[in-house]
Length: 107
Length: 173
Image (cartoon, rainbow over all chains, first blue to last red; front, side, top):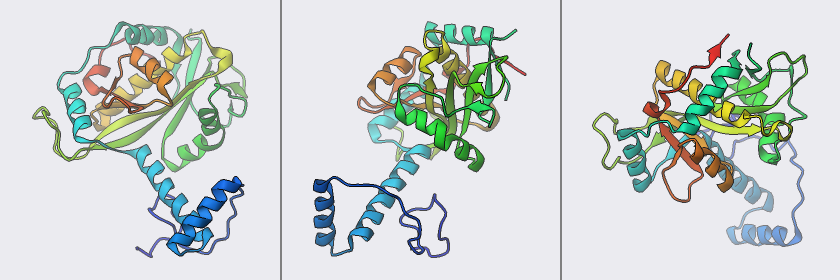
């Protein structure tokens, strides 16, 4: 693990540093037991388990917002659309007309 | 005289009152959009009445960002498509206030987002406009404007750059 940066929210994994910030949340009893059981299976503290799981999920969400990894099938569809771009349909042309008539882009 | 103005989200916009009916997009506008704007993560623009005094009621909004699209290979790709990561514009969120339904706000937001995406691509490159639909119902909304799914189950849709070309220009000022 890279140890240079400590708190950049975008960096992967669990950022280092002392646990100073509290995020309040309550767990249903069943979920709490499940988490405790899973943490025990891994042999780690419950807090560490929750931190790692949340960091992993956060990474996936952040990445999905800025990066799209296509499967082979998706890439084929994607490439086909670029090769043969659909013409704007009437709904889109009407929307552009409506916006051109009523909207000014100020910034 | 235009009836509506599209503005970059600022303090003069009453974002706390915005209610589209979908909690995740309302909360994004209320709690996250300004911070993403300041950090350069994405740009949120809001549609308001052209003559609205501050605090301006937000009739609808959308968020644009950059996204990279990657594939190990592009089966059947045209020769022009680089065999590497390509960039696109992402329309991450678009929402209309419940109180403003039935006025064509959604259509106008889609059209202005499309024009801004076209201009971004013309300036800095990009293969097209990607949209993230919040759910299946929203997929139907975007499909109506010609956006295509690239996978049957995916909530992500796409329109290539060339499909953004035609249509009336929206004035800037």
